[in-house]
Image: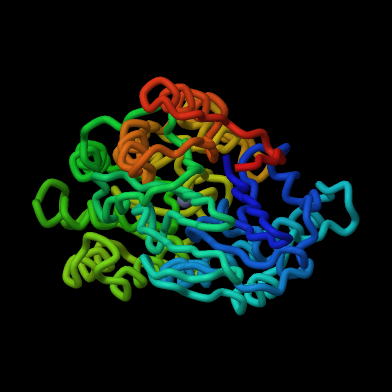
Amino acid sequence: MTGSKYLVQHDGKSLMVDCGLFQGYKQLRLRNWTPLPILPNHVNAVVLTHAHLDHSGYLPLLVREGFHGKVWCTPGTRDLCGILLPDSGHIQEEDAAFANRHGFSKHHPALPLYTQEDARDSLKQLRTVPAHHLFEPIHGWQARLHGAGHILGASSLYLEVGGKRLLFSGDLGRSDDLIMLPPDPPPAADAVFVESTYGNREHPGDNLVDELAGPLERIAARGGTAVVPVFAVGRAQALLHAIAVLKQQGRIPTSLPVYLDSPMAIHSTELFAQHLGEHRLNAAQCRDMAHAATMTRTPDESKAIALQHGPKVILAASGMATGGRVLHHLVQYLGDHRNMVILTGFQASGTRGATLANGGTQLRIHGQDIAVRAEVLQLHSASAHADARQVMNWLRAIPGQPHRAFVIHGEQEAADTLRQRIENELRWHAMVPEHGSTWAV
Ligand SMILES: [Zn+2]
């Protein structure tokens, strides 16, 4: 889970598929500091399936350490990387500065993994290619990106090299997503690399609008504050759209104040109008979504939200409460039972989001233990990932019979459950590769 990086090698050339950061447990995050098993200047090209940091967030480091090839992706992914990567550099710099102020780090001074400037430099190597167009990331290697739903620009990668056809699912969206289109039907392949975030789970049948209605009515009625940790890209927009619909239908008061407290989420929301046709919303719905909340851009505007009395809803990043403005809101509102925390997607083990989802009664934020008295809910229909049934349907739609499936990008139990289903129901060879292992396909 997280830190997605796959190296495809043939005839002395190397292509990296995704270039992600490890997130979550400290043990996992420390992997970001370990040198790669290949020198960055020996990588010939990179293809990004999508812009989430666990798939793109290592790119600034790869470039700074000597990678000078092209990074192929869709226009949507390029636009989102332009928002996400510099922000990630900014967070790395802030974390290092914080560690230096408080003497947390064994290293003096603590250095950022990379800076905002490194991130901006790496963006110059992005090259866009529309979905369904053949391109050659390396001379003689045929590649094509197919829509994967999930978030704007997200794709699966089809790669043909040395007579083999490889298919990387990327992160697959759900077929019934509120705002994103379903994943495209997959092409034929010899080997498939399939994500398994929800490999052992199925989403309940509710839709996001209905699931959100009850909790927001309760918050409005009891005068509390709902803090909603959101993934700035993707889920923030789905929630805004759902809130706009609920207000239009009169199911929640139109006067209920809603804040989108994340400059990144605000930018991503604006991008939806520039990528019509790549999601389910029309121009009018994009406008309504953008007007569904008060956008707070500056830190002062963010702090001023706390001065607002009465019921309100605050959407703020990050989605697993690992950092960002949502932490200040959690400190402010967790201690009162009238308030609510609404978790909106997958919560990786080791994150504050997972602690809350598992009923934790205390949360450590900024070196302080905060008592959890607020009601905590997890919305299952807010996930941006296909569930196990939808992943199996996607796999079943691959024409012919891939001779091998590699089950990747999931926590161990989820990956192993999906592996068993593939073996039992599809009768393909399936395996969960170890971190750092090498296979001939
Ligand atoms: Zn993703």
